[in-house]
Length: 104
Image (cartoon, rainbow, N blue to C red; front, side):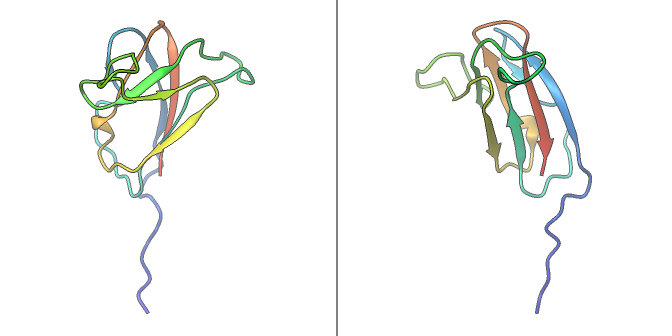
């Protein structure tokens, strides 16, 4: 029987503040096994977001059009099965929006 390790090498986490200018989630590579979990603070958090954060690739924009990416409303989370978090970009329609992230 083969048993494979299913745990990340190093648990990494942090926050990224984003506004109307597109921004990379992180600027360095991490040892990721499954992906990255993202969460936008909501009404039950001490400092909730006030606007949607759009998640996507390098060309993501803050709209629902073809380049709009995936909307992440306040209080919601999403998991992205990526091994390189530097490929994740964020943008919003309002300034000072927070995204909490943790590697899996």
